[in-house]
Every structure is written in structure tokens, then in C-alpha cells.
Image (cartoon, rainbow, N blue to C red; front, side, top):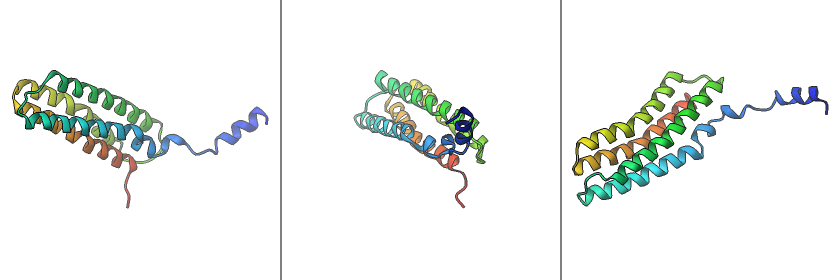
Length: 143
């Protein structure tokens, strides 16, 4: 096959980056699973009346790193996509995802009691909901 013929063939292939599975794929599932595991751990710590520990803060930092990768990937996919969806809302939810762990970290740092541990647990529980909302906005309107 000649070079020109190959190039003309590839323009007909579907564009992979427009698939919803790029945003709702394995990475989002990993973030959700990690956040729920950390939430369970934080709730156990709160039930045993423990203060927020350095390990819980490290878990929040790890979740924030995962969310940063999710946000960068989401913005890159949005920039490459020609689909019509609520782009401002999409970016807003991505930024909201990024804001949750640091805000919980700051609040729990000032509340050095069981309540601080519950704040971290709540942040871990909110994160999967926000990731789900990002996926819904990426999917666009259903009706």
C-alpha cells in the first residue's frame, strides 16, 4: 500500500478519544475504589475515637495525586474532543474533585479530634460521587 493510500484510509477510523470509556474507564474505577477503601479506614478510625493520623493525611495526598491525573487527563480529552457537552461544567467538576482532599486536609488539621477524622472520611466518600458526576457530564445529555 502506498503512503498516500494509507493516510486516506486512517481518516475513516473512529476517533478513540471521543469514547466515553476514556473518562469512565479503569482509572475512574481505581479512584473510586481507593477513595472508598480509604473512607472505610477513616470511618473505622473515627469509630475507635482516633484523631487524624499522618497516615490518613498521606492517604489524602495519594488520592489527590490520583485526582490530579484524572483532571489532567479529562482536560486533555476534552480539548481533543469535538463532541458537544457542558465543557464548563465538566471542568468545574474536575476542579471540585481536586479541591475536596486539600480542603478536608486543612479542616482536619485544625480539628485534631475524632471530628477531624470524620471530615477526612467524608471527603473520601464525596470523591466517588464527584467522579461519577464528571462521568455523567462527559456522557452528555441522555434524552
